[in-house]
Image (tube, rainbow, N blue to C red; front, side):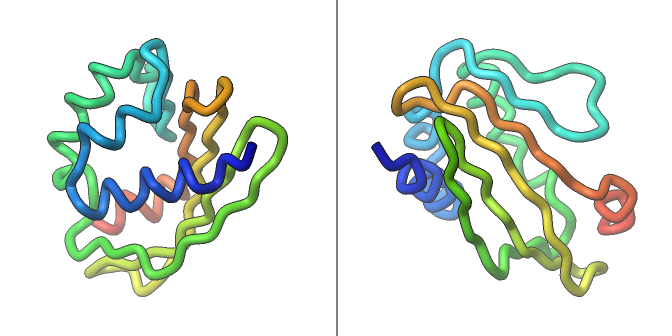
Length: 119
């Protein structure tokens, strides 16, 4: 089974603002880990609720300029090239781990100092 289309479908859902559709590809007990946070976000419902504030979590002028994926055994890494009003261009990566065809862990890797400067 190829998992990359599931991850791409999620990125497309975010772009379309279809957060309900996005969370359908996650298990109920999923975990989201963002850099610089002391605690992980646990559970699909908590993840869905957090998505309502997505606009406030992104720097002004945030735009994904390129997206590519690397697939391994039971996981996909998205390499995200992005820019914002204050940052002319950068990259971040997101690891998605799967249980069958559902995501059970999403882990973001970001230069946190640069991310703070983007605001």
